[in-house]
Amino acid sequence: MHTPTPSQFITALCLAWPAWAHANDALICQDASTPEGATQVGALQPLFRDCPRVDDVDFTGRADGRKYYNGLYFTPPKDRSLYEQADDGVVLQRGGVMATAKMSSHPGQFPLLRGDRPFYIEAQVAISSNHRDNFPAIWLMPIEHNLRMEDVYEGDPKSFERWFELDIDEGGFGPGGHHTAISWTGIYPNYKKIQNPNPTSKEPLDRTQPNVFGVSYSPDTLTVRWWLNGRQVLEAGPPYVPEIARRQNFYLIVSAQSHKNVSHYQMKFMGVRAFVGGAVASKAKGRP
Image (tube, rainbow, N blue to C red):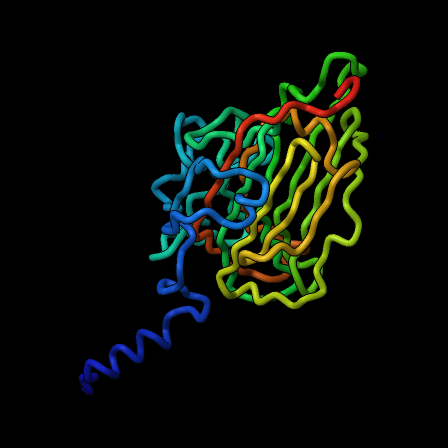
């Protein structure tokens, strides 16, 4: 029986390690500096910064005060087997979800991002392949859009909902990032939406490398700007960023979705940072 030398053993470990492992890369969750996207909108107050761990995920759907939850209000809980711990983050198998709000649409441990204040949030992720069927998503939803229909406002028709969805990035739509601001309205199930045109970058993006996807939000002008690895890449405003956003409060979702379920992949969630600014008086005229 051949006994490998120490150098051969290390080489074998390196060859066996997934090509998309990034334990030595810089992690945003260990970076205390203020990103340019936060500075630009005056969101200088750190709200939270975290290096995700499986132990921080609630798999019961009931626990209070956890950092992450394994489902959304409109999905069943995801099985624990879809999640595993890596040295530099949580690996989600296809179908896995991590959200910072409970499945009952109540806040978890992390504060919500208030729509009446400027904010900036970014997440660092990598996926195991660049297959176009892969649908990794990093997005924000208002906690008011829930089964209690707390996005129905006084003065609107009965059961008429209004909410703002902010997709920081979605995969599989083009060679580059896909960034959308969506204004939703309507009575279930007949919802209507408008979203910013040309949201997909034509600049190729290697998603197997750690990428930092961020978005800033300014309530005074209802402007959102998307950031990729510290560089601004896109901007949108009204009507795609609706006035109702100022009255809503947002939580983060990281999900390893698929377009047609023809490619199995893993999504590594490596870190998140959020910053906020002071409250801004609404400039809206009339009913928001």
